[in-house]
Length: 198
Length: 296
Image 1 (cartoon, rainbow over the protein chains, first blue to last red):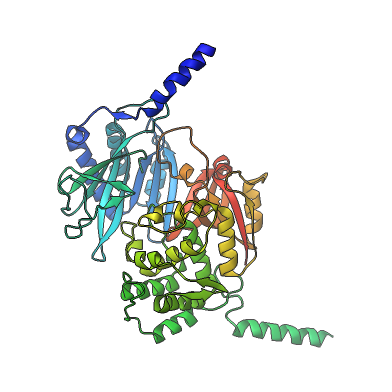
Image 2 (image 1 turned 30 degrees about the vertical axis):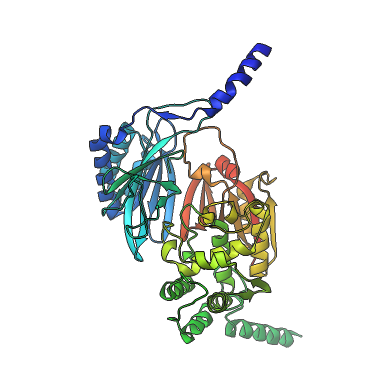
């Protein structure tokens, strides 16, 4: 017992100092086709009736659905094979087949969350889509989880020489989304690694 | 005696019908001023004047924002990823209680850099004056310059123990403990700004000693305004870990509650609009840390 305690005390600083490691260095390039098609499908579905999806358990079998209208946001949580999910989508006139296909694609690609955000340039509204991916990681005791977040802008963005997303080309101020610095993948897509998926 | 009673009833009825301040509020039973008075006040003032005191506030965005809040008090949006939710809930209540007072306060703050409201003196620091109008990537708050000013001014004025280590604003502090609101501070803000009696059960760490949360809320919702201090991370899970610190993170104004089987549906105001949430009775008990009751 004492030996175990000594061992635990000895290795605990090591365990605490280890951070979670994402196995793939190139997740986006490896899954580019599927991830981009998820974003495109969501963009199309969301344009007609706004919604967001998030998987709230590790197995990605429970989905949190936010149905967004001008006056009211409805938040529901369903198991993906629960009849109530389809009933709710039908009730609020959503493209049920399209959303079910999106949910299946998200589960297969480990996309844990997808949502659209508004932001403003020169006081005019713009939109971006953010999705989070749960990558394969090596995780140590007490180390936080890691998720890759991808931000899809509709227009080309400015980046500095280190590839960090800028507010605009003139001010060269780093633009943080949800408190995170994002890095360039293409002029329209950037990524960050976060401890939260949304 | 009977005639006297009829006469008194008639006089009371007459007074109520001619005085819209009596029972006209959507949320409060008694209000101090009306939306119409506030609109009339706004129409009389120059809405194009620039302010040297608030260098980053654009007059058009500022006054458009005031008009929007007047037209729809539920439009107050505390911003994405900020710690302004408590101030948002307070603003929502103040706007319902005294719209003219709110608009006058904001206009005087804009003109003179200081003002008072319900005997509360507001004299924001120069850092606040510089920051208002610069908050970005917070959703629609980016173009709501009056709300940016009000939330920053409130956070600068009211302090609680959560703000102990960060009392002076610096860039980005809208997302930090500088802007955090503990339960006692929230109660104090509502009491001082709305001038109504506020009581609460619960605390910042320990959940309220209420046997049946649903029945407790149902009993008081018709006679009081209810604000809930909740752990939003249970509703808005943001990682897949099962073990989490259970702490409250968010303030909402409860507008309705109903139960069907084990499912409880809450309708509440937060973030610029109403939300309807379906949760189990167990989750309802789990998320609530503070039940704040405000006299109507």
